[in-house]
Amino acid sequence: MKTAKLDRPNTIAGLLDKRAEIAGMIKFHRKELQKLVLDLDHIDAAIRLFEPNADLKVVPKRYPTKHRAFKGEVGRLIMRCLREAEGPLTSLEITKVQIAERGLKADPGTVVMMRKRIGACLSKLKYDGVVRSIATDGPYKGWVLTRDLADEAIPDHRPLLAEIEP
Image (cartoon, rainbow, N blue to C red):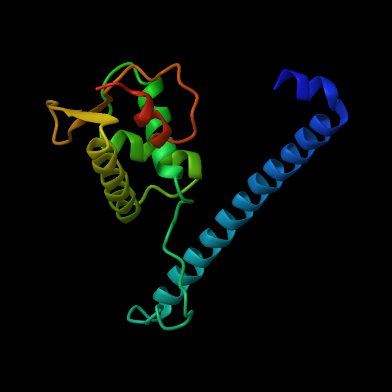
């Protein structure tokens, strides 16, 4: 790999520049998409003010899920939160981080919906052997990583599972 970098410095530099450009575009378009979803949620709320029984599911053929995350985004958030935490975190604590990072309004309906999504992802991660639950004093389970993964810098948990020896 080192020889390829030395043999073709312009190629590598060009690819790194292109990668940075595309990553920037993805970041920009995610923010724009988030704004559009929030705008749509606000329009739905305005419609419900005038017509509480309005059937909003009929309007678009493919109605976007409210506050939908990109594929893998919730899992990465959970892994990052658990890596940075000094102790167990509950699904509610992780949900509050997600709501704050995405700039969502923390109304009770949104909190419940997002907490259920976080809980489903935590269950999947538990099934995969990446996290485990711990009893806490409150109504929620505490969650921790099954191994010390704080130093790992991987975007997804699946490659990690193949590396962990049972």
